[in-house]
Image 1 (cartoon, rainbow, N blue to C red):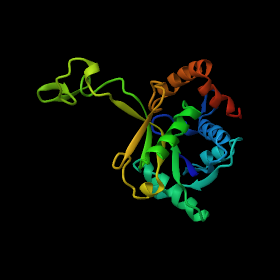
Image 2 (cartoon, helix red, strand yellow):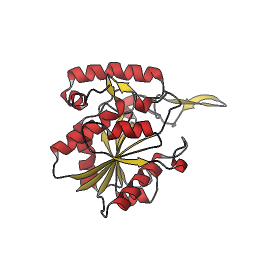
Image 3 (tube, helix red, strand yellow):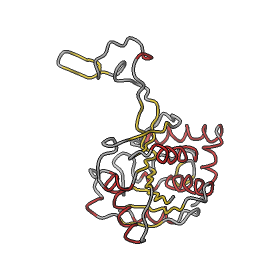
Length: 252
C-alpha cells in the first residue's frame, strides 16, 4: 500500500490572522497533523508513504518541513490555486500530479489532513484508511454527529415566516434521520477519482465518525480559544489525544 499524505494551507486567513502558523496549546498547530501521520506510520511499517505540504506561504512550508518528526516534501502552490475561492480538491490534485511527476510511482490512496483539525487520533486515521480499503469507496470522509437536525429543529426564513429546513411530520428528534456534520478533518481518495475533479459527494462516499469536540471550524478567535480549553481536557482524559500532543516537539 502506497499512500500520499497531503497537508494544504494558504497564507493568511480572513477569520484568524495567520492561523496555520500559530501555536496551539504551546506547540505549533501544523505539527499536530504531522504528528498523527508519524504515529500512524510508526504503527504501520508496511505502508509505503510520502508526505507533502502545499502552500503559497514560505513560512508555512518551512514550518511543516522542519517539523522534527518526519520528512515532508515541499510543494509551492501556483498563484492560480492560491485564492480563497479555490476548492481544496484542486489543490490536493495538484499535490498528486506533482508528486507523480517527481517519482515514477502510482499511489493507491491520497489522504488529506486539515491543519486546523488538531484534535484527532491515530485510531481516527486508521479507521478512515481501513474503511476506504474495505469498502472500495471513491472517497471516505470524517464526520461528527450534528447537534441540530433539518428535519426537526432547524428553520429557515420564508415570506410566510419560519419553516423547517426540510418539511416533515416528525414530533421527536429520535424519529428524524440521523444527521452528521462533515468536520473536514480527514479525506481519503482513490487517486483516479481525485483526478476526475468531481466533488466529494458526487461519487461513492463513505464516512467515519469522530469524537465530537464541538468545534468544526477555526474561523474566529473565540473558536481558537475554546478549542484550546477543550483540547486540554481531552489531553488529560484520553490517551489517544494525549499521544498525538506528546509526540509534537516543543519548538520556539
